Length: 443
Image (cartoon, rainbow, N blue to C red; front, top):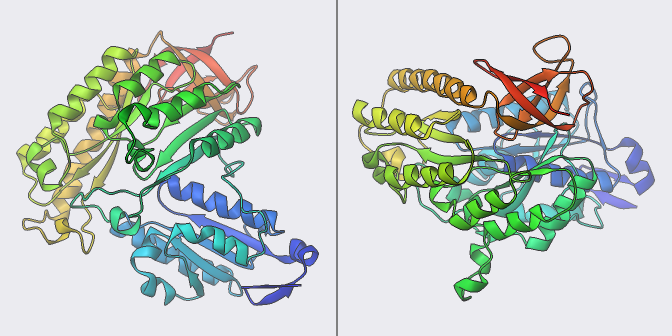
């Protein structure tokens, strides 16, 4: 018999029939990965997933604190989970839990707050998990699997709370990642997305004291993944433009069928004055120049980005610089964030905070520009061959349509005949629409 922390004693056999879990994740791909890690561990110990209408014995909520909205949503979900599962033990982890553990612990139903993700193996052990997993085997409800390759950020951007809640820079061993990718591909995943808190710093902690010739970097990891057998592709998540090294670009050139020609480069602002206030480490010229190098090396690569509007002191001229950098690079997707002051960060105390109505106006302008830039990019892809991962069949925009994500990130609609969910197919683009492309499967 084992004493389980949610207040009841179960044998392993009985546990498998009665202990139900629910998980909720807010925020980034790293959070999605970490929730899945916990879930798989708990399932291995005999827990089962609760149905939507079924109360759970254990609820795990992975929170986000990147913005004030993230904090608010985290609190709302904790209260809702307590309401819907009144007898459950609620465990809360994630960046909001790390930043305000006392406030989280005071919320109704919360029985434990995990403030450091490195505690997850200990948590699993307390719930009867004997063999702590070394990674994940799937990602529930998704066609594309996230693979966490590193954690932590050492930068001190003036607006960002993340280095406070994830300060420990730590890369996963290369072989552990390779084994996980193999497992995911063997389990049917056709795309893996490499993710981390600071993806471009993968391997930095391994390299201390070593000569440069012996360094391990992101380019080495991507190269090793591309050497694996199987019909799958790899995509990189958010990365700083200046960390898209020439070595990484060479790997993308060497494996055009394996590495998606899509980069999500973090811009945040196109104004050098605002970039300095943000304590970013590069200028607009650095960002534009590196994207130009990528354009010269790869055929019609896709770029997406993050952009903050309404940073303290942002003038109309600064905002226009941000619009201009988006036009110059040609982003097909812009994740726009109104500046959200995070307590304890320098930017929260800066003068000239921008009123909410101006942030909203500028945000609307960015959204309109995004629509225009996406349409321009999709037009360039007409007549091109794209690799598409089918994610919906006969549930698309037309009755017999299949819809999927292309290697260049945009949504593509094709005829559903002869294709199945999770197929990786080659498509020739025949039409560009405002929100998607239309193509014909190449056999």
